[in-house]
Amino acid sequence: MELPEASGRKLKPGDAKAAEAEAILARRKPQDWLVAMDERGKSLDSVELSRYLAKAQTGAKDLLFVIGGDEGLAEPVREAAHLTLSLSRMTLPHRLARLVLIEQLYRAFTLLKGEPYHK
Image 1 (cartoon, rainbow, N blue to C red):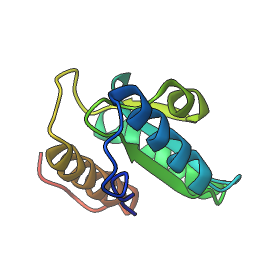
Image 2: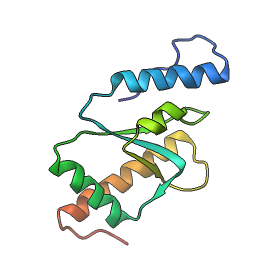
Image 3: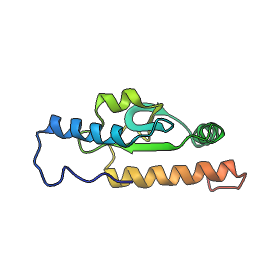
């Protein structure tokens, strides 16, 4: 799911970040495991990510991966996260971060199924 922009309103940078955090946390269900994507987060390799996904599946948890806006994620979102995950220490454009995340999720589920994947 992608949250809409602040409906055409021009907000101050800090206000936009806070409004985004409020919208993210309002949509989260109590059983969701929130995974905040942030360059300061934990780095996992593909096998470690697949183990994390397996753990979430055994608990029948829904994973909610969150990539913040231009200013990154507000502190309340990172604090609420079950895991803060880094794709890279470098800053990535949001669309590229989504693509990299999707590819890594595909790779992790491939590992969980015991299928080979290209290294």
